[in-house]
Image (cartoon, rainbow, N blue to C red; front, side, top):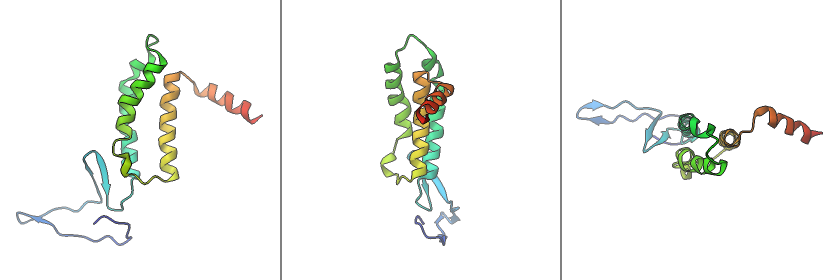
Length: 128
């Protein structure tokens, strides 16, 4: 049963006389369906899938012959489409928004060739 009740209900479903195992979550049409109706596992899974695509595109990010604008278009077409597939069903919490923002910023920093050291320098100068 899908719901937010703290008491989990078990349901016996039989197919040809065999009782099917009840699970707390499963992947259906690319999204994680969980018994608590929470989207945390789905978002974590999508970030993992998108990270895999980013790694496979490492050669694209490092080539200087491709403009940064084109690289951003590649990010939107190939990475963001996987990351945000079925996102309209998510009910985002602050932690979810932060995780998505951290992922996006890390990829865009990679594309723009902004190092963490450079970011730390700008953060320090903004504080002063």
